[in-house]
Image 1: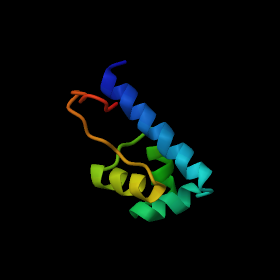
Image 2: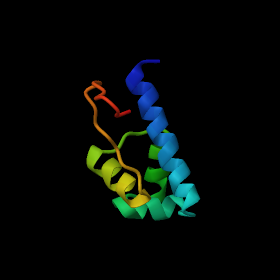
Image 3: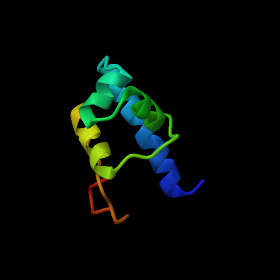
Image 4: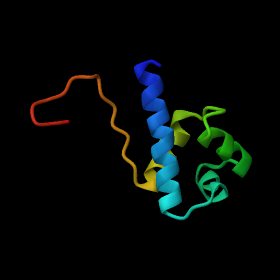
Amino acid sequence: MSSWQSDYLTLHTRLRQARESQHLTQADAGACIGVSERTFRDFESGKIDRPAAEVFRLAHVLGIKIIISDGVIADGVD
């Protein structure tokens, strides 16, 4: 598995964990990004992809910050 695939799976896992910890249903989360429960369920399970704007919107609603990195780590920053 390549690095981006591992990161992608981690993102899906963290989004699901955050949704569950906030007691949101898949229908609730789907409504936050304007998709049906079925579409959200397929996205959350990794069966389909969603546009980046929807993923960032969902992360924001769930309190998750997505950090874009070029792989360079500055002193004192992980």
